[in-house]
Length: 490
Image 1 (tube, rainbow, N blue to C red):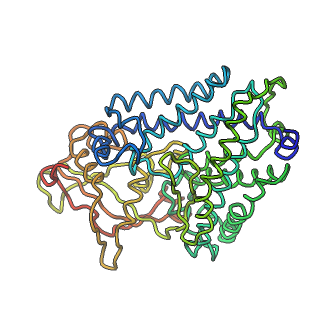
Image 2: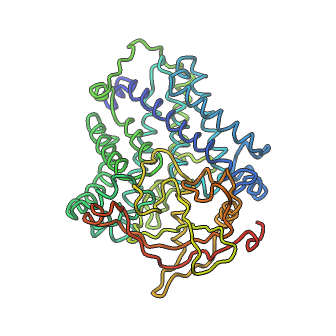
Image 3: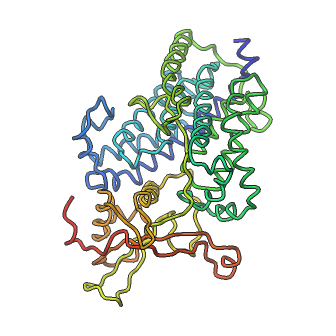
């Protein structure tokens, strides 16, 4: 332990921050399950869990819901996760014996794994696996009255290393805009859910954008190796990684991706560094870690090493996979993001009307989403670290559309999207809770259509004179006007 203390540093404060931070992120994640789970995945949701369970085995997607599924049970899972995560955030789970701390964290992991493994595409984002992996290994940090081990801290550093290096390498192997340093010319405008500052970041000088790409390559490809250096090298590397994540936090909405990555950066700091910036004073008296737990941690380290073989091979591969889990428990995964950067932003806008017969004079009214760009005069909101799953899925839809000189070509529509239209035609309250503005609060529309637009940020002069954040150009119709009678039951 003396060598570890000199090389890694003391980690009592780091442990405390990691546990509290992870608890808050789990709290947020379970809130998304409570608020969005039933309309997305429930018995009458857009992608019902019962239908999914008929197609998969427990061994392929372990989940408590293989025992049975009901919307009430989904709510119970969400509320249990919220309560346990809140107790962990308040430190209650760390005030008792070791078994209480470990059990609480493993319970959070099992409950969220149960949702993620049946959540299909609505829960298929890379940061879901990140939350599961980080939460599982947080379980072995131990309560505050026990001397911490550096083993789980180093495991979390290893996770940060894979996250950063995976993101860096997939950029260098992917879109050429990362090589010619022009990626940030487009990123702030085309990212999934811009925030209030994204417009201003987009308008920074191009020289600063090119420097930003260089800095990103340095932080994600070179700096991660410093995480395993002695102090203060590891702390400097962690600080650079954290700084970049903060930059991404203030310039966009990426759910808890950047917040979790920044939190993992805490594993790179020693107490001696953290106590200079955090007013935390822990008791110097802590009981030794029981030998049984010591032995368990060494076994855990061996298991992580074995599970790391495939992620390491993936990092070395020219066909590198992005955000990939090699096991059904989402432990020791491969990570990476934005190997490709879109140069143009396309948006699908939903409109409805109460007219029973459509004519050229028909007045269409536009639906609004909570964060996705729609109304060009609406300021992009700050949503992260909360996760708006429907908004993200709508953002993905244009990727399957071919934009041609004379219009657009739509090869088909996602089943969940057709169900969304059906529910809007019925004014389904649960589904409308996922949306923003509903222009048909008094009675449902008779027809709904989806238009396909090209969105661009306004220039500074236009923004000052009109207040518009966006300008848009209609390119075609993604879904022609439909009624409930047009849509067969799915």
